[in-house]
Length: 160
Image (cartoon, rainbow, N blue to C red; front, side, top):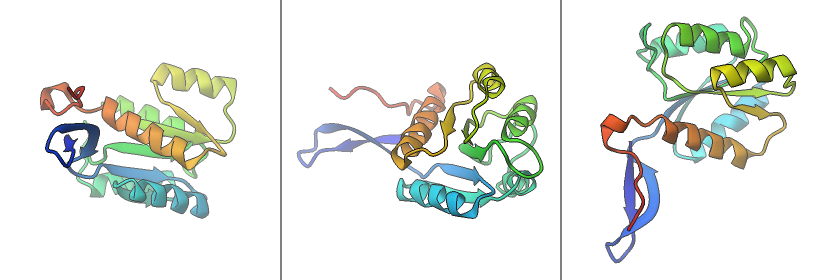
């Protein structure tokens, strides 16, 4: 999924860039925030799709060729906790029960103790609103790098 960037002298550099864009789905009912998040992820070089509710998210995953199990039409799902239809954490639970391997990044303005406990159990990171766009980019990149399959032999290695 990633390849080493080379310096002008031909020696390996320390920067890794994606060979192909990651497919990221952003599920957020606030149109302005969804567009802002999508624009940032597009600027970061990803292929980005948007959904305004839980139903639309599930339709997007199905349209991307996802099958249950596992759901694999996206590389990352960034979703709001308070989506119309289903909560973000309920979507995570359902997709995990369907043996989805897609990582999630949950956005919320209201990180209750109960939500924090559940996301910790499910190993889902949270971005608390308002968040910086650089925090969004960094969290997305980290989740994508953490989910590169070791069998792909494409994981970033230290440059020598």
